[in-house]
Length: 256
Ligand SMILES: [Zn+2]
Image 1 (tube, rainbow, N blue to C red):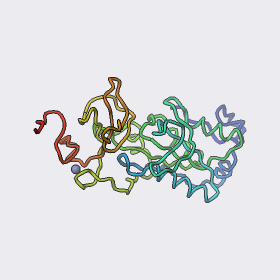
Image 2 (image 1 turned 120 degrees about the horizontal axis):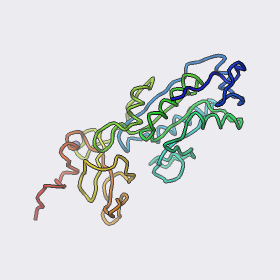
Image 3 (image 1 turned 90 degrees about the vertical axis):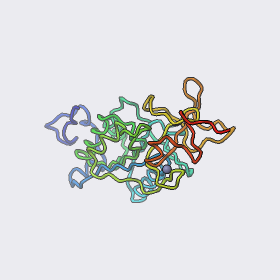
Image 4 (image 1 turned 45 degrees about the vertical axis):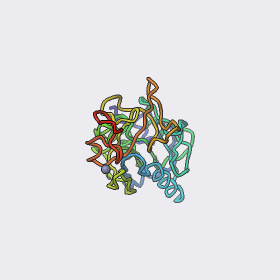
């Protein structure tokens, strides 16, 4: 990736990206550099990541700091961070080719402070975007709090999460416990298509989570109209593909 040029106030280094822009506060912080941090909070679906993201934003803004909220494919379908407990805040939707540094630059250019970033759905970040976040931390002293799933329905790390594990100053598993139907901690996300757990398919299929509600059409529909949903399972039941106390799924005999 192309590194950002030096500090905006340095006239000897014309800066095509950040040069003519006055940088409120961030400039002050560069003169008195305080270490900023890149923190990644991760967990399975339903563990309260978006709620925690909004809580961190609340705590930061109460200290007079100004944040920018970013998300991708939020479950509400609108550019905002929304949590299942009903909190929501407007956010900027990231595209795959969004340069996060330019987003921040544009805020600075219009006189807005950006002291910290809240990044929800961080599993969908590209590796390059995680590197851009790290650069904002190290070179521009913007704190970054990223929230996301660690692994996909195949139990493999998402691209964004993998790069965050590699680069973050601090990695924390969200402590709110999600339980598998058996009562053990739920750690892994299962994709359920037409009532059966699947292990193949596109990495990202946005759908609802939680048990299917009979007659309610829970979840999204795949291209062929078959309903898709996600369910959090413990490792053993993810490995077995067992979605509940009554075995269901491919290869199971139907009981009369
Ligand atoms: Zn279980």
